[in-house]
Length: 183
Image 1 (cartoon, one colour):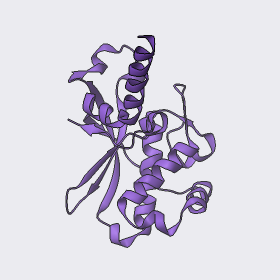
Image 2 (cartoon, helix red, strand yellow; image 1 turned 60 degrees about the vertical axis):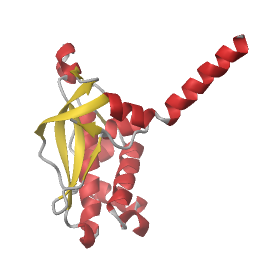
Image 3 (cartoon, helix red, strand yellow; image 1 turned 45 degrees about the vertical axis):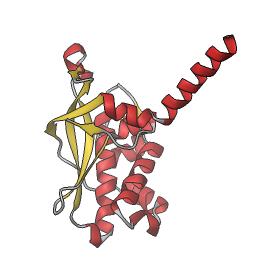
């Protein structure tokens, strides 16, 4: 009997790990409540960081660019709730930021790579200010701290087709969840 309970619990844990992204997208929804002004890559350290890690395969399609942008963001940044930089040109050296910095860093790298492939000229990444809904309930109504009043994420959109990807770089870094859902 004890072995059966351990087996069932272990099986549930494995299933949760395997399907964590689908579960997250099903129960957590983002709602856009604003946007942030983006940055352009200007700092030589940031340019060199991107170029050093970039291969031709990373630029073949939008999915490859999104994957590489996530990898570079996750590799370089570390989360902090302290006062910090949000400018990607400064984050390349300071490395500690919160969800705003994560989103702006990801957006900046993504747009830099999109510009490298002229076939992808219709794509653009923008940072959005969002609120999170847990099973349809706005969780920000229950949080007193001004630090958690909203949460930034990135929308990557094709201006011609309307196709969109929704990415939360902070969640990507800490939970390995590539895309999120919006309301």
